[in-house]
Length: 331
Image (cartoon, rainbow, N blue to C red; front, top):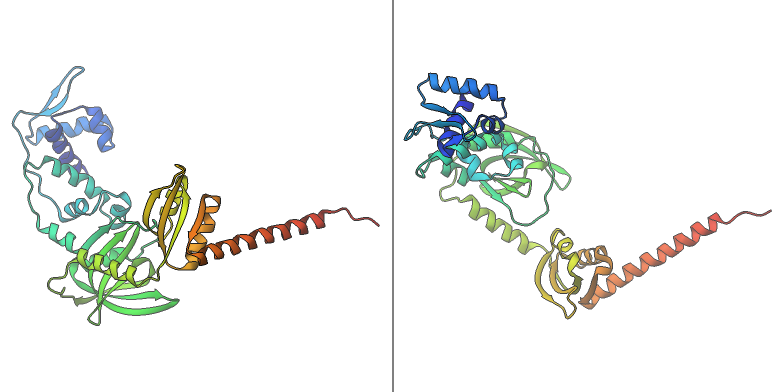
């Protein structure tokens, strides 16, 4: 909208001192002709905009002039408090607000606490730690966001273990983790975490939800993660790994690297890691191929050896079969 663009121009001039028409046009994604018209509009409204000619010229404000139009909208504050990650901002529908908000913060001479800051901190949390990114769809994220903002309950249908469960939940917060969204909700006085992509239906209802006193979203999420990890089965292994494959190992889901040390040969690393199960450890070891040497425990060494031997024998059998089929037939 033109009003937003005029405000952006005013804030850019205030923040940067002097800006050329070309810079303004590029930043705001309009033509230089549009910038000239906008400058005329600002001047006509009483804003002291000056034009300087020449190679070092550009647009600037009269010395000492500062706008007081730095009041932040709730969504603009929230956009900055959440993240500059385009995927997250796009999912919440506040990508454009982020751009304008960043300019307003640039122009602010002092840091002011906005009432909306507490709202976003308590209701939306961004967790950037670990886990692989996932490209999931969240068709009901906007409904959850609205219900969260208005403190209203939601009826959801949730897919779990192949079955659809119906729940009426009061919303406590949203968490984004590596491109995956989770909603924290209270159902029958129990706090639960739901993966948003598994919600197959959602309807906001006309029933208010009173958030429990003292609830802190970040603290709950960290505690929930700790409980989840401690409940997982655990299997530890020691192995030598080519340094070039370390990044591949780190990208494996549910693998925790416990210790890394250099081996006598610089190309190799001594690694101790934790896997969910023996089977999971075997799968990872096989995926690393000749770049890993299993050292302990013995059951993992034996399992990897048997799996590799089976693959080799199967390959030989298939090769013999193919060669046999290709032999010319004689009468």
